[in-house]
Image 1 (spheres, rainbow, N blue to C red):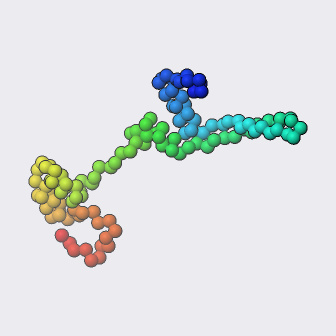
Image 2 (cartoon, rainbow, N blue to C red; image 1 turned 60 degrees about the vertical axis):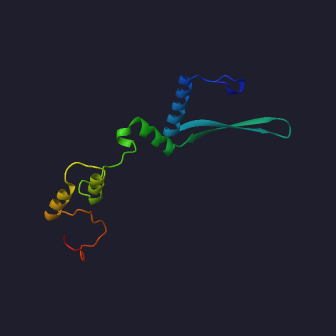
Length: 127
């Protein structure tokens, strides 16, 4: 691959190169760093150091979300069946059935229609 001379890789080759780079970024890799120092007398000293690039969390997340979407994809949990807002939204959007009767039957059976997160038990009015 020689970008300076105008030679660009084809789509298949470019995709393979990017996939490899993403894989290496996700898993980490070793590389050799070279430092060149020139002395006052004109001599050149090359120092090679072996270094490790740590795995990149963003690359890991991108790889997993595309390779294993059922486990790592951006999936939202469906709303709770026992949620007043979900039932009213469904009714408003033209849901089937009599949702008011469903809500009444749940409250008569003693079920909480609205989930009471963070609401103390004392001072709540029974339905």
